[in-house]
Length: 294
Image (cartoon, rainbow, N blue to C red; front, side, top):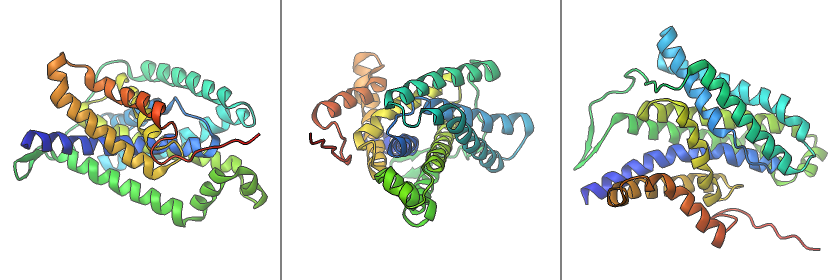
């Protein structure tokens, strides 16, 4: 029972980070009906920027984190303006292919600047484990969970009460109606990409503190896609719940099934779930069904 609870706690922490990164997928899909396959590279670049500021310039972690988030926001804004804005009004597949090409370009830039070696963050969080009964939790896991919860609460309040957040929700519901009310849809697209880059950077920095940083970290972007689809590509609460479900199932698979098959099943499990979701509930748990009448 203790091992089971340990796996569930680990799954909740990792799943919460997945949920944060999945929020970027949801925002971009809600605003432009496109899936951003460069999400993993946003995650990787933001993480490397934060790590470089800490190790090369001795900037404190909190300051480096804020600078990395500002950099990520500007990166997302600029990429939307230069690369993706010309595809507005074009078929969605064109924008999707553009994000795939963008992913390759950003990955190449990362390899040129930072190489392929695994790097680790300096000791930022205490190494003294926290005991919750018989469950032992590393402080980095608790801090990661706390940061993710705070970020999700901030974005929930932002979308519900701020003028910009309400404008983004209106644009997601009906772009034509939003434009008729004087909302700049192009600006909303840019803000969505900036926020997507920010949440990806936060997720990458937290995961980097847990597992280290190398080019393979960008694969988290693709792994998080099943999270967004499970919850519903147009549902922010769905992204949170989907992240927790995928994180827990992945952790349980790694703890119970990987030893039986020699490993590797943990990495495949999110995509197995993705296949089943697309077969039986293609709009996800909380996604809106689209019905076209001819």
